[in-house]
Length: 295
Image (cartoon, rainbow, N blue to C red; front, side):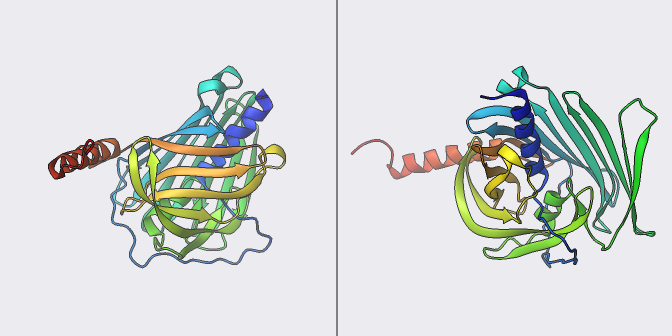
């Protein structure tokens, strides 16, 4: 039975998976393995939209957006909110953004807003690279009382949970069998995250059949209980310089959770229209070759 408590865990888990999967570790020793030739794709203006599922249930919608705000800075935003059957049980809306510096390859500020039923929290992280410190503030909106904390930065560059997939898309090594590794700040501590390319696959999506790289991140830090990870998390990224994540699947103790791309637009493209053109072209080619119909 899909209870409010269970549903809340479903959506929070999927949101965590969509942002990033990161490894459990006890000792941090920074590693950096990235491509010598990063993608020259222009992320500015990109908007991606997803439907999130628990087993067959549509429980949430998610979106991400990238905007270039000056020569060196990007604003990378994300949002997850309840939808479908979930709207009858619990209202959840989590969102956040990071301001990322292309020159230093490091976020400068991260803002996270959690609205999960009665749980309401805002978190702000500011990164001082000169002092190598992170200032962390957590508070309820409208209240003066707040929690503050200072965390040492052990290594530069590093990413946070909002910029990590963006960083992998730009600087990842997209070759079968190759692995990309970089330091990640999880919001509490630093640890290395890795993404390994397993294979090249053509998969069916709501936008059409898309050529992708199948990628497995390092073991995720998952919640205990019903939504503890049972298997691996898998990402499918488009096999072009955009490296758009079109699908994410994670097996848990109770079924599986997934995110499926339903819309993708950028400064110079509309993925849905691209694949509609491909379908029409393929249909016309088959007609010209006489491959349609029966004998």
